[in-house]
Length: 445
Image (cartoon, rainbow, N blue to C red; front, side):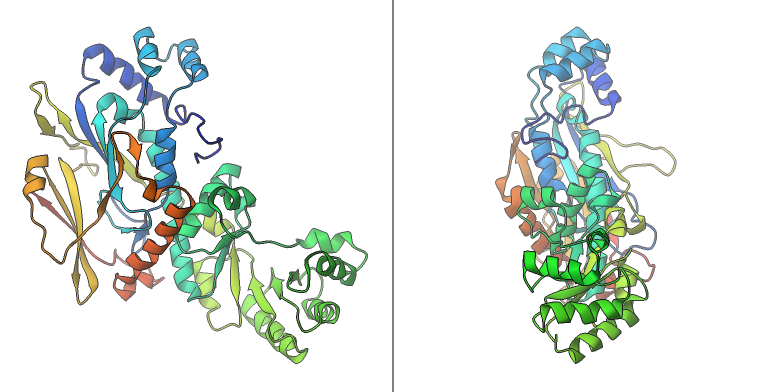
């Protein structure tokens, strides 16, 4: 489902104006139907990061499918005089009918990895630029941060609690991207509904403050949800709250949550107190502005799960992947395909469409190989047997591959992230600042 809209609602204005003005000019000068290849890549990873995680591609395919200007969209373009009358008529029948290939959702990526390749007429492809980048940049930033947090958690579950720290629909996208990154649930009910995710949450501090005593609040919560619920213990005194929680629920108390203070020492004290009171099975969840570094610092603490908010939905300091959408090949006046590239200082691009592979030594990834050239040259290229082809087909003739869509596609992306990360050298899991964990080697055929 497209962000912020009901299923099937148009996404055609989730774009920048110049996509439409370029379309208008190209239709007028006769270049709009030239066959083109656009590619998405990032020139560099966020400072010190070892890898990135592709996310958002599954929901992007749904957004591309729904990119059909509605009557009100077209009327808006007419009222603002953004495009000419012939272009308005052309837009009435717009539907992307081209081809999209790219890195599988959940795949790890590196500088200059051709994350997405969009092929079709210039008119069809140029309109999609902003939509593609807005989805892939944000979702991949969240999934990349989530993956680092999951590694730091070392097997303990991480849960998304970031909805109140983001735009309301960005929160839904973040919850989905967090799952790609290895998170196991979300507090966001819209995301849980759309993608069939486990939903988590019990009560906030206001629920305790509402009641005449903390005991009354705990009694109410347990009566409503049973002894297996999780009680928030830091509204007043954590030690008193834990004692009251076990008195009210008994040794079958489900768990407690700590949302402030020195989480490591508090978790240790609470674990010892719970055990002394006989609540050996009660779990401890910690929240409170966690990021991957805070989670890593808690590895030796008796914590059972982590709830992550602000740092998750903001990419833990890297809220975008700085991906770009560039034309790399286009049809010339004589009908032949011509590689094209920018030569701008510090923004030069590599001409020609790409293929991408990953090579391995001793079952560990050793390099990313980006091969560029004409369609004929790439078709004739024989990759070594031990190289893994990184590109999959997302859309052919404008029809999305159902394998990558919906809740099932999301779970496949989550599983693929774990598999892809496990193939990287162990330095990928390091939180120390460093270079990409494998090099990208580019070859022009």
